[in-house]
Image 1 (cartoon, rainbow, N blue to C red):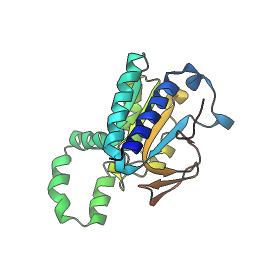
Image 2: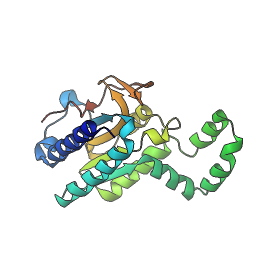
Image 3: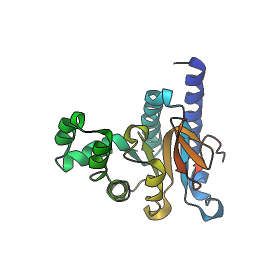
Image 4: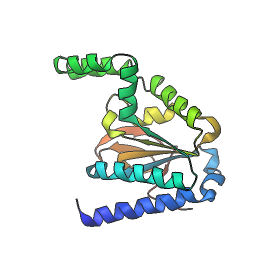
Length: 197
């Protein structure tokens, strides 16, 4: 791992810790009545490092009394398949399916319009967090598209700030997963790489 990039990531997560520790972040209304949705884009090469930094950030914020609802999407999907007694079947049959058939079969029990948002809302209602983190978004592509998921989370209770950690680029208009594949336009989130209190 490039030491300079590693240092930059450490520094950026330190800034995130101070941003989320500041009550001003939660008290200032979003611009033009938009929802408090934020995207933190990062180089997918550093996926493992970023995941470790997110887990550490959740722990550090909890020591400050700030409850974070941490949603690792891949783990959530595995749990949902287990709860429906489908995980073993999916793993068994995956080698014999074409990509199209596999995608179709996995999208039914892991529907990004209904099932996933409902599971996230249920977690939020149990935890009553101050902020929500959604991660592992690259691991669930292509059966969950990030912009589609965000569009289906607009009814989160109490307008709790939501941070999506995104392995790719986001220029405040277009999301490019892994820096290459367009995940469609999404205009309603702030880029946390540029965000200042």
